[in-house]
Length: 122
Figure 1 (cartoon, rainbow, N blue to C red):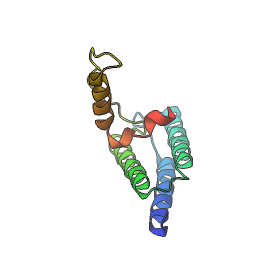
Figure 2 (tube, helix red, strand yellow):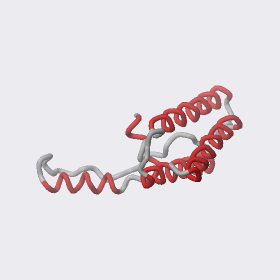
Figure 3 (cartoon, rainbow, N blue to C red):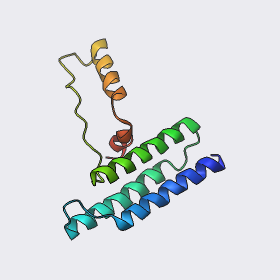
Figure 4 (cartoon, rainbow, N blue to C red):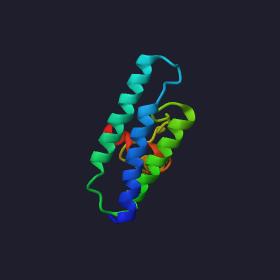
């Protein structure tokens, strides 16, 4: 990892913890605020720990973009949890058919950047 990318990653990590420190729930209830702060901190620690050994610059850039997208969405909507996506159902294709594999591939491609790592840790 180059020093520039390392500084960017560490800056994002610090930014997430600063956001968690000042976070207030949209509903204004203290217990919700505490739960959301804990979620932000645990999610950041889990994802950064999981990705600490990445060496491929492309994968690192994807993780950085996902982090930035999740920060922006969380701040904009005042909700730290990933937004759900609504994809069409898989259809009636058989699991061994080419159509089924094609549908799975399309679903994987259509997943937004801010949810790439969410399914891997959940």
